[in-house]
Image (cartoon, rainbow, N blue to C red; front, top):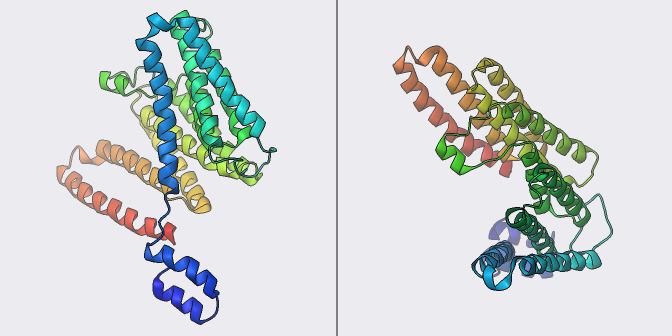
Length: 319
C-alpha cells in the first residue's frame, strides 16, 4: 500500500481517522519494526552462550573436572525444561502463542544443552559408544516431542535432522572436500524414501490441520532429501541414470503442485533447479558431446530462462 492509496481509503471512509493515524507512520517509515532483528539477536545469543560454555569447559577442564562440568550442563538443561514446563500452554493442534517473549528461546537453549550433555558424555566417557545410533534416535524422539508439546518449529528441524542422521545420512563439507560424498552411494535410496515420507507427512498433517505451520518444515526437508538422493543416484554406476531423471521429473511435478498449493516460491525453485540439472546431464550425454555449438547455445538460453523464471514467478507469488 502507498500513501495515496491510504489517503483514498480515508476519503472514501473505508478506514477511520484513528486507523489512518496509526497506519500512516508505518507507510512513511517513521515507525520501523525490529521484530526479526531482535529474534535473530536472541537466537545468536543462545548459540554463542552454548558454544561459549563448551569452550570454557574445554579450556578449564583441569580445574573444573569432567563430572562437575557435566553436572553443571545437566542442571542448567533441567532448569530450562523445568521453566518451560511450568509456563507451558495447553496443547493445541493449532499454533500456540508463547506465554512470554523468551519462552521459545529457553526451549531452544534446553535442547542445545541436551545435545551438549550427550556429546560430552560420549566423547569424554564413551557412555554411548555401543549405542550411538540409538542415542541419536532417542534424541530425535525427544526433539519431536518437545517441538509438538511446546510448539517450536526450530526444535522440529533439529528432530528431523537427528532422525535423518540415524539412518546414516549426514552432510559434511569436510567429506565433500575429501571426495568422500559418493563413498556410500547406497544411501541415495534411503534419501529417496525419507524425502518422500517427510513430504507426505507434511502434506497429510496440513490436510488434517495438525500443526499446519509445521508442514513447510517437513516438506522442505523432504524435497531437499529427495532431490539430493536423485542427483547422487545419477552418479551411481549400478543403476542407469535415466531412471533418476524420471524420478526427478516426478518430484518436480509434486514440488510444483505443493508450490501452487502453499504459494511458495522456494519449492518451485527446487523443482526448477533439479529439473535443470537432470535435463542438462541428460542432454549433455545424449547430444552436446557431439555438438559443442549446441552446448554453447543451450547455456545462453538456459541462463536467460533462469532469469526469466526468477523474475516472473517471484512476482507472481508476491501477488
